[in-house]
Length: 109
Image (cartoon, rainbow, N blue to C red):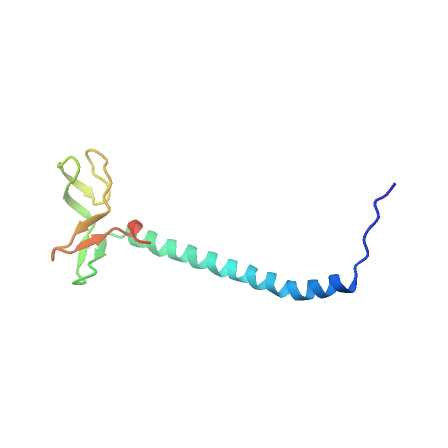
């Protein structure tokens, strides 16, 4: 025996007409938020992969590749500031020549 289908009433049609625009707005907002999030991640990745980072205080460009001293093993190594070349410890910031801390891009919200 086949299942019976329920007839669409006028109240179903009214409810659909009232709720459909809300679902459309919700869908558009989800797309906008997603695109904005992707754009933010691309900007942060571009900053993280750059060879210099600008100081938030004095505006001077500071090299992210060079000679560094690890805060964990205290070894001096040549390479990228974000990861010790000897022990592999990560870094969240480094000091500008003016003395202000420059936070690495992935540490910012």
